[in-house]
Image 1 (cartoon, rainbow over the protein chains, first blue to last red):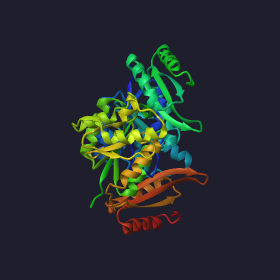
Image 2 (tube, rainbow over the protein chains, first blue to last red):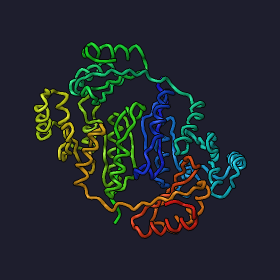
Image 3 (cartoon, chains in turn green, cyan):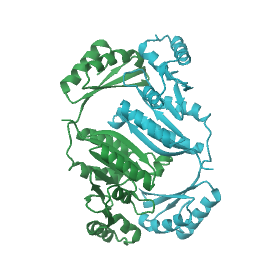
Image 4 (tube, rainbow over the protein chains, first blue to last red):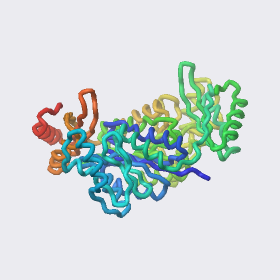
Length: 243
Length: 243
């Protein structure tokens, strides 16, 4: 059995201009890996209808799941919900269940409902709501696309609730070996080992610290024994390696 | 005159698995904005031939420039150069100028050239080298695609050299107004203002600090006077706003 695959789509001019540094991609990448879902692609697009709709259509066709972040607030440039509805050919309008969630939240806080806030209750037909325990305005799942907020605290809370109901696969086993050699010295043995173990993935990440240059070799795979055997082999080739 | 557009393509399983948090996207986004080049898309793909080649082909056709990060080291999974060559239908082999740069660097450091290190001198035909003042192994420009290293210190040094020879456009003027209201209260006036000023972009970014919830409104555009006028208008609508 192979794991489900996933793509992430971040919507936001502020990321592309460099005003804001995204943190949702890294957060979701870690969460999905732990859940046994393989993230294989991420994209960031502008707050523009064609860019969002085209990306949703392409990613939805290619992956088990698509997770989006951003563009579901009350302002004029929050158009993600409309674009996801359009990508699936679904109507979108204020939905009673979403409106009730918002109204209860605003009533409790003494905030007035207005036209802008009501936009956040616009949900495509056939979608399932994603709970927002932080600020009430819900995300939603339509088809295989999970639409969430861009504000990191809200995004992370939505991911918590969402992953609890998504079937995961087998989280890969990952082991690290630090070899205090140049990457060019590690590459040869690593290539041989990778050729002999097509079911494993071998990454090599050079870095420098106060002891000098070194390489972290990361071996990943579904079978713990195979990962351990590859690490043991590398530790023989490079006797000074540190687990 | 509109500004050149750009896309960024990050190549790396380690970003998608959540092992590593990318910093090159945010760095390049800020540098391009300051250089008057509009980044309109970013993608992260796996270390796989089809994924890289397809992304290079699609992004190269849609943008003035494509900037890549990652996959040009000495190991078996460093296949970016081959994929970019394939996307342009160009041959790739060890090139004398790149080999000479590497050999001089290794000679100075007393490091032995080997087959793995020599891979980093493989450059597509017709490409222009991008200088690597950190560790010598060059990036390259082929067509409108600029291929750079993934290690942030090397990536950033390559961007420095590259941008010095790329024609930029007009950096947008950007001004910020902090409004201590809910985003749902700011959205209405912002929508009206955005409708009246199609040449400007209006972003709204809610946040919370020890004084409570607030919204940063960012107005961007090519014309400083138009940006200032929009900010002045918002400051009238929200007299407690902070510049």
